[in-house]
Image (cartoon, rainbow, N blue to C red; front, side, top):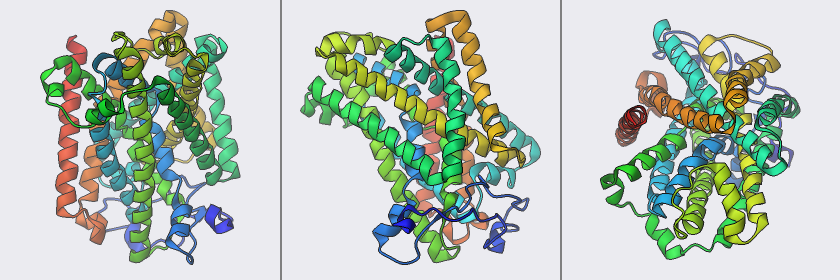
Length: 462
């Protein structure tokens, strides 16, 4: 059982048991100088003996931490708007964006396992200093924007559930730094366990919400089939692009490539192939759970609001206040608020961790964990506090929308390096993407770039 929970006695240092090819040459401009998340690096043992299921269970965890970013409060607004305005039609967009995410996260996990570098470190060791500096700034902006959405989401949930003013709610979210430090000191598995527990809470809340909303399941299944109407209707296309932009998160690509390295797998070709397979299973299963959450939000909005002619519901607090009277149950609104709070808290945990990974990876600096995380948290909280204090609730909603626009803009700058690096034979060796996967990955990258350019154009011209 201890091997299944897989908590090792101590993290292995970056220079231990590392094959030479991961530390120099092999197409890299610079040698790797430190492990990703050094305090947790290879701290979770994978049993060498036992069944495939036993080994896989020891690998389960990173995928769910990544999946958190696919169900954060930033996704809620686009899903609510899509369901209330267009019924179940945009379910196909959620499915397609989720399939894109499955491919990209599989590549991210593979990069970390094969090279011993997270995406930030791989960029630093591959590109020139000006390019790296630009990528770092863009990535920090994206993480701050994502963190902003999570902070605001958690603050809105505290306001709806307990009547805590938004300003105080934003400040309270800073306490998650203490939670992260406590859990990581206990062991990385404890942090994963908390994240999975919060995801299960969100899932249970939405399962009950779907039961109460009584959707037409025939129409739901039709919604998963792509419709030409999505392309023909400009308003529908705009929300569809927003769903894709809010679903595929750039910081998750950095996060996943790092946290797969918390697993102490065998550093042989066979060991790495097995680790890649387990990491892909883990992230794929977790992402389909995220698909359920996003689809559930849209289904509830379609069943409750769209069928009643309320096509104007696009904001989280508006949906909260309407659920109870329209479903005839005050518990429905409470569970919606609980799910939002769990989503916001979960996302702030992983977002703060991603901030640490990016800062260490691009800048190759060591700071005390509490200081790194405090800096990351303050970057998000300070603008949220200022806007909430000056503009109130309306300002926080506008800030939430702005955060999604920033994320859309930055996504391409994370996807392109990932696809380029995993398709480089000099760096990946026998693990390089096969031709079909490379074509698929570049196609996804081009689609994301094109859609996000269109989204940005529409946002700034409206």
